[in-house]
Length: 345
Image 1 (spheres, one colour):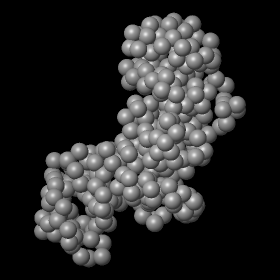
Image 2 (tube, one colour):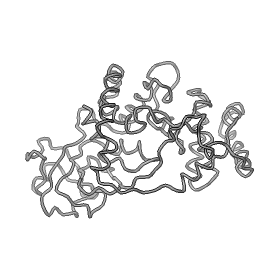
Image 3 (tube, rainbow, N blue to C red):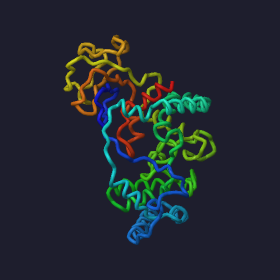
């Protein structure tokens, strides 16, 4: 994705942002109505791979009972391989992209969801220190507030991708994690569904991310990010951000103006500078004032150096924490999430 009219100033050394969007969207068709290419199909080579994998899984502590449950009805999904091999790159301006992901309809829905779940979002904010609007924005970005949780069986999807081999090691790791999720009984095999790439539930966690960050906020012994009740999923999103370095009370950023002729050589993670030093370069807030709070160690980050502009975003919060939500399916997060929750506030 090419951003031609925005800049970001990043908060942390790891604030590397990239600008290519993939088409890895979740399948929104109902499970019973999945396209034929997303239904298990006969593939003897895949079956042999599964047998060999199960031997490896047993050696890593996965029980025969879990393997039987997981692979009952599972199979090779040619549509998953096709999606993986035919991801497309799109180029849009930030304004065009925001018109898609943060348009009036989605913002209105976000406000409705924010109001409907204000109580639980407030509890989550108090526990994890992540603002309710931020959590709601992540929810909207990841699954359109639960409307696109994905209906493809995760075991079939990630085993197909592991067998296919293009990213075999990665997806075998996801398959092992999915088996452990089943063994822990967070979800049944029938309900362990997600996108074609194994991104699951309201927050589109991949299995390894689920293992590391999913929360049982309801206290029922299960970390359920799939059900119509989004409580655990919203708490899991907040837990992820909190553990990834979210700073309570620090704003995500400020919109800023860059001077004419601003040097693209100042952009990039290798040019971290204190906020106090930026006015000397002519950078200021959009309202004409300079930032009052001297957070340290920022860097102007642009998707591509040629996208010089006179407007931008002063990013003060830890953007990589948000970016990770999109790492598997999209690489286009940038300032989209903050714009969405700012509008929904």
